[in-house]
Amino acid sequence: MSLLKTLKKIGNAVIDEAMKQQSKQMRSGSRNPATGRNEVPTIGGKTLREWESGWQYVGYLDSIDLSRYSSYVGLYKAELDGEVMYVGRAVEYSNGGIRKRLSDYTRASDSARKHTSGRLMHANAADLKIYLLLVGTDEEAVAATKQLERYFIGKYSPAWNKVFR
Image 1 (cartoon, helix red, strand yellow):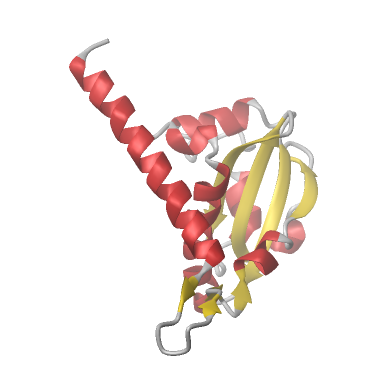
Image 2 (cartoon, rainbow, N blue to C red):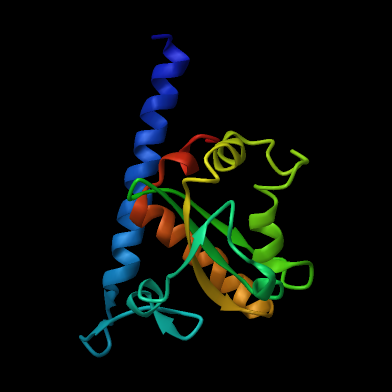
């Protein structure tokens, strides 16, 4: 193995571990020095446990009806054979939202599949179970979605999120 490949492998392992630790710390919270109490952080007014319980199964990527998700921003999780392969976000609430983002993976044009992860989503569309985490329909929801994406990538450590590092 070349030196660059070795360094990349080590770097990815360090990043993975850091994301897992950050995810764990976000979930457990921290002690408030003034009160001495453990405070659980919130994102968008909900705790991470509340967000975790909000995932909704909507079907297989190649056959789900996404029309009702056109104005929503949030996260999507793709599972293959019970393993989380990818966690992505849709943040364009005024331009098709989650519907548009997930449709990018199944349409004939490959303009949204420049990254390996997009090509893998397209190639496995018939076998990918999709779960949605609807966050909202405004700018505040966009900010919360970006924070939640980091948390869930750290939590699940999906293989296809690592491909483009």
